[in-house]
Amino acid sequence: VSGKLLGENLHLIVNHWPSRRGGEKKSAPKRIAAADLGRSIIDSLLAADPEAKIMLMGDLNDDPVDVSIKKHLKTVGEKEKIKSALLFNPMESLYKKGVGSLAYRDSWNLFDQIIISTSLIKEQQHAFRYYTAKVFNKNFIMQQDGQYKGYPFRTFVGNTFQGGYSDHFPVYMFLVKEK
Image (cartoon, rainbow, N blue to C red; front, side):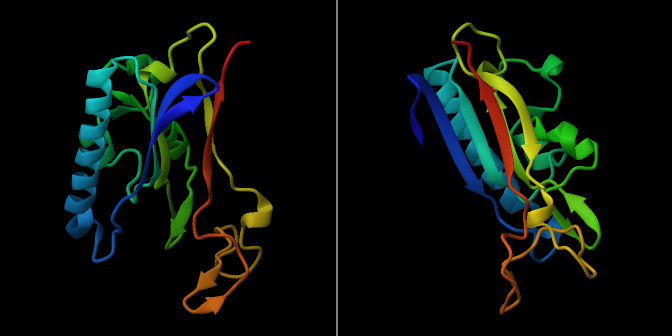
């Protein structure tokens, strides 16, 4: 989706990449293909406008350090290391600190990500820029007891309604703009 946010052009690419069902390695080519398609869309937008403000986001079913994200989307996790052809992934630093958006077999993953073009990290007067990204993991959306205490409070487990929210915690980003 491309449009204007308070008068500023912004491009949003919302994704839900193929799952890891059948095994991470066996299913990896499908996520790599999704990453290549996302990168192709981003490259087209940047060819038309090198200063395009782009956000690619969604459940990518891979972590920020996986090959689909790092090599195929061409991301970096540190603003200081970014070049114009690369994308900034603020979720990478969260992941390296152990923050996750979902847990599987007592291991946290950060599959839910928001990745941005370099123009969103530049300090430009009167323009939106990246401030911070977070995982929304408040107590009220966590499982409160049992084996999965601290995991996201699911809506369903199998066919049984639990009354929760999701099997993933949401992620969000703050953009700031000078008046």
